[in-house]
Length: 87
Picture 1 (cartoon, helix red, strand yellow):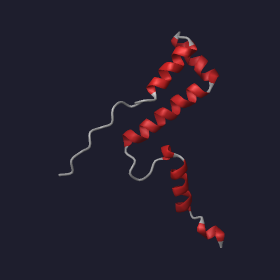
Picture 2 (spheres, rainbow, N blue to C red):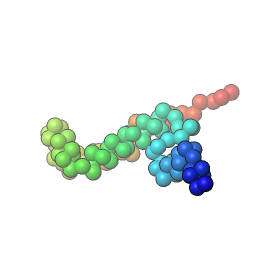
Picture 3 (cartoon, rainbow, N blue to C red):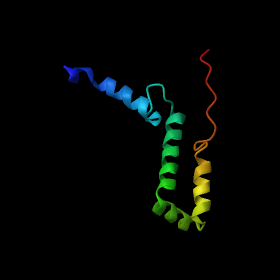
Picture 4 (cartoon, rainbow, N blue to C red):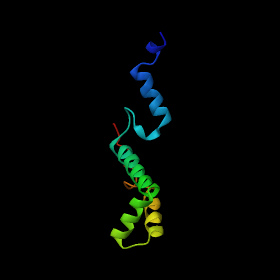
């Protein structure tokens, strides 16, 4: 009987409550791309080998590359789009 309580919809709601970047029905393209960009930059900063590889490719030190990746997390896709008037 307890299996019936955990439907796919309930599990999806729990997923959205736990992870903010998973999106929902009202997520627009800009929000989705922003979450993807932040996840990518966080992954690069969190994996030292990948960070070193990118620093070597850019001919920069790892601290500078880490700083730039962290700065890009603020607005990875630029400013949010202006809301469209429905009138």
